[in-house]
Length: 261
Ligand code: 13P
Image (cartoon, rainbow, N blue to C red; front, side, top):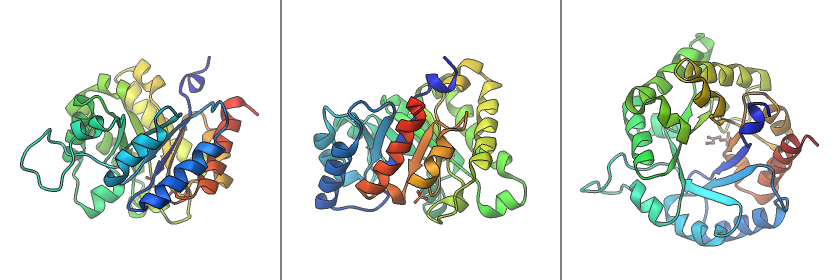
């Protein structure tokens, strides 16, 4: 088995602040009805907090996994408006996004806070999906690897390399998020390979087994090329995860890559 074959592809939908009870019910129904009978890849959705119980109930006993889009770095206490890892586990969530670029840029989450959230997720037995990525200005200044390394090293310093054995990384170049401008498969592969080499310097085994997702304007039309790259292990999907048709088009490509069809 090659390293890539040991890392099952993951297609994950980040719904961001979209949805309603009706929309969530219809979207999940469409996805459940349209998934291959035996998906050769993993599927997950990240709804807004308030829809977590509805998702939990609807996807129980199905291949769809789910989690939240962020969590508090604290376990409990006087933190008005926050949601803890324990609360997510209480609703059977098993994953959580940490450090999405929108959390970093709009809500001021620092590398340190993201590291604390990653640690909190692990403390509660949730699989953290650490999101990293550079802005357009940083890419144009040739700082992509430096930025991604800084974001990952903050977490490594806090939790150590072994913790990455229980996590996922999502490389999401900020300039590709919601812009319709996807990184080319080669551009994305180059950063994914860099991320894997960064971790391999600490532990070759952990680096080889770590799933690294690509995010940023993934669609049915570009998913095959991206997912076929040796260090790209699936996608974190925003806009195209909001309709069954678009999300399933990406899932179809994942199935093709995973089965070599
Ligand atoms: P888009 O797929 O809409 O570009 O969003 C990507 C993203 O931010 C997923 O977390």
